[in-house]
Every structure is written in C-alpha cells, then in structure tokens.
Length: 202
Image: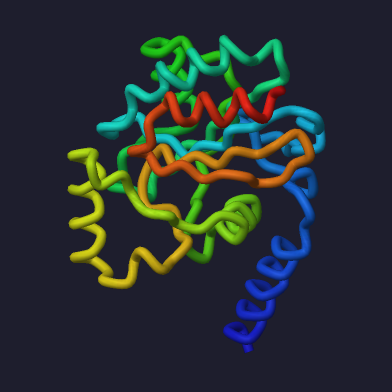
C-alpha cells in the first residue's frame, strides 16, 4: 500500500511539472528556509545553476558573478542551487556554503537552499528544467569534458540518452517569458553563455 501511495505521489509531482507552461509556477526554498515563488522573476532573463564548493568547476562562481554584475541592471538574474549529488562536492550547511561563496567569490546573486536535482528527491523545478532541455553532450574538445564523458560512460553506457543533470555547474537559460531556451553543460565556454544572455536581453 505504501509503495502504491509513493508511486502515485511521484506521478502527480511529475505530471505537475509537465503541466507547467513556464518556470513561474514553481516555488523554491531560499537560504533562510522561506518559500520563494519564481513569479517574482517575471520579465527577467534567468540563468539557473546547480553549484558546488569543492569542484574543479567551482571557480566558475567568479565568472557567474561577473556576468551577474554586468547584466543585472538590464534584467538578468543568476539563481544558484547548491547540490551535493556529484562527488559530494557541496558539503556542509547552506550557511557554510554561502559564507564560503561570499568570502571567496563575493557573490551577490540569489543563493537558494541545497537541493537534489536528480532522483526521487529532485525538486519539481529541476524535473521541469530537465524535461524542457535534455543533455546535449559535453564539449569533447575540452579536456575535462572528455574526461567526464568517459567517466560517465563507464558508470552508465546509456547516460547520453538521459536528461539527468550530469555534473556541477550545469546551467539552464530562461527567457523573459519563463521559457527554458538553452542548457549549458559545465564545460561550455562562459563566452557562449554570455552571448546567449545578451541575445535574450535585447
């Protein structure tokens, strides 16, 4: 009976995510444990990122902050969701993570509570994001991209066909209408991310 109820709940959550027309139907938990509706970001261009503080990609925090500072006044937001699902590279509480990020990268963009982005505990927002934009591959000309591709293939030969988040610092770009328009893997060049942001802000 419990298994049937769990399956029903899972289906309802999945259907709820699928039924959303944009990201504004979702609410998330901020670093203070308060629920925040994404409706407050209507009309803005969003870059939604799952992050980690002990990852080879962690220096991207600096690039994300630079992007935020450059375009924030034009209606751009970075929404940061720390996640410990990839190599357990986001340890500690959200308070500890936030202190690290402000001390080392002086981040000013919104940082939300730690979340799961894959699996049965993935938050509905991430279920929706993955439904809208699946995995399109790593940059195999990038040394780390090739390494990740090989590592993940050893773990799961079919990983390329699945929309799951593959690693820290995967980015979803959302337009001013709340539509998910691009997905950038962590190996994507930040210059490519910036060009896409600029295009949506015009």
